[in-house]
Image (cartoon, rainbow, N blue to C red; front, top):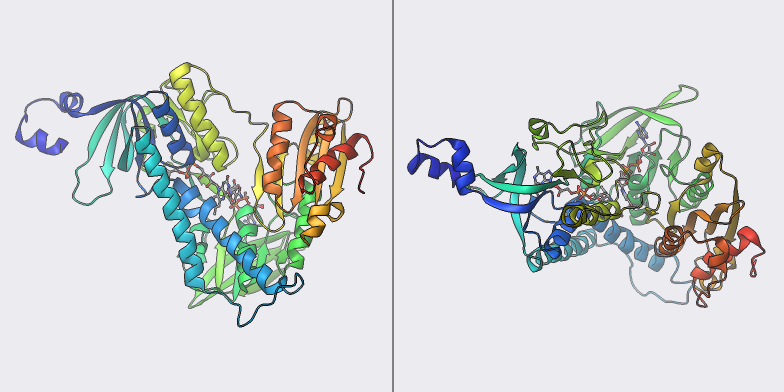
Length: 492
Ligand code: FAD
Ligand code: NAI
């Protein structure tokens, strides 16, 4: 549209004038419609700010809703159900007649259905909050102007003006030098979520969260899974004791772990992937074959096409856009949130920042407590943690006490025949203030919310132990673990 005005009606006027004469002006323009961006947009709309959200994917919800949290949890949930039907139903007194198996296309279709419902829901929420959803790729023209290259073919590029700008462009899988991704046989997290067939042999580089969640899914579907991890522990940042227990439980489920192992190369040869690995300690090399190789060695900030350098924004050596503690770049009105900047790459962290960024713009203050961001790995059992772990406390020289309670002694877990794991509290040795909670067990991801609340309010383990918890619930294990840090648990 802009181009046609330039050519036909006012050819002699400077392009700077045309920009201001024809562009729409907003209080806030957000680049990226993931959990950071769309939540910031909704909040800004709720705060009465005129807001636009630019997204180039063709659907809102970002990595999380489209190729991350949601599709992976759909596959985890449904493959767990399959596992229960195949391996637990009999023990639970349920007779299955006929064949139990996987209809893989339907499993994938169920995942797609959840994704579509949720991304569509976000679009409705933007509408409800009077946010303009601009479908295209956004890039900086100057400090207050963003150019949008529409995704729809035939539509012309246009520009918008913004009093404030929030960059929320997210992240992408970190490539492995020398390994070529084709998203068919050598895949990232995006490809593994949309395979056409269940691989007989799946090799995974990286024993982090993506690696372990996807390993669980495909092991349950029948793949022979090998996880190759450079470090001597899985779980990328889990409490050491919890990581060890998790590894044992996952190994019992059939996962093969090659820890302390370096990948030298991975090459597709026809329908097979050949992988060369080296033992980090001994230097001994060996070969491995797989039908699919998943590369899951972390994610890196995504700023492609953003043209942020043109307005002087800076990034660090990991590609993270540099901001202050109010998300501000060197330009006060340009803020950055979510995966593309510092902090854990988690959807709920990006969401918190989205709300806080909108509040900073409208009210001048906002709040995110980075010491209290929970992590959950949705394997079975789930692993969840918040606050500090033992290794971090030792490094900081803080004296602490530990209280643990196993699910084998919890009545609900026993009733549900689901007793693997434990709750572990770490509290300050003198004050009993909760410093961290680490759970491996059924519903750990739901239970960790109580730990988050305890941390936020500076609760002591006694505060929790003296709070009445319903019976029979798994949360009684949580209460008992708190009790065990300063007294004796009742049921163990
Ligand atoms: P993103 O979600 O990446 O969104 C950024 C959006 O910006 C994208 O849609 C992109 O298309 C758009 N964009 C980029 N550049 C432009 C541009 N120039 N113009 C217009 N649009 C642009 N986190 C959890 O908390 N829990 C989980 O269970 C979980 N599971 C995950 C599973 C997988 C397989 C993966 C890969 C990730 C998972 N994550 C999970 C991480 C989570 O997805 C991210 O932390 C979260 O999506 C980050 O949100 P964001 O808004 O910062 O960025
Ligand atoms: P990650 O950081 O969780 O794990 C990467 C693993 O790969 C680490 O254990 C690391 O030691 C290993 N590694 C790195 N280089 C290697 C190499 N050359 N050879 C072998 N191993 C190597 O990253 P991942 O799993 O890719 O996930 C990315 C991010 O996505 C996570 O950090 C998390 O923030 C987010 N995510 C969150 C989920 C959740 O909350 N449930 C689920 C999935 C992803």
